[in-house]
Length: 168
Image (tube, rainbow, N blue to C red):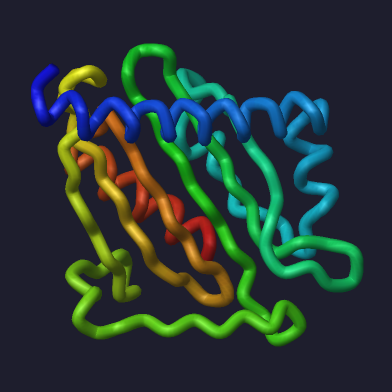
């Protein structure tokens, strides 16, 4: 086995475990609406932005817990043709006692006037070496962390801009 395969095999295994966890969470809740009931905010509408070809395959809530609700939502989408999109949305407010530190050195991008951190990674050989884009940014009282596999750079940036506009 090549050294690259030795490195990427455990990573692929971790990703599969992670995806299975959120798929099981969505199934356990019965529907996305039941996941949203546990949140202390109304999440940004993502499904309509992605389009009908994408299916929500995993979702769960997490984060700070106050007044019986949580402040963070993870969603995973797949189009069945090699494109995947994952997004974590966190509601930032005083009651959630969230303090976020962003280092200027990490800022390398701008998404509709909001500082952001953009990364491009190369997927594993086993997964077809597709580019993976990661983007972290805040809009108003929301913090987003999103990743996409199988998207072109321009598709990913356009998607991120639509989500940021929706969240304003």
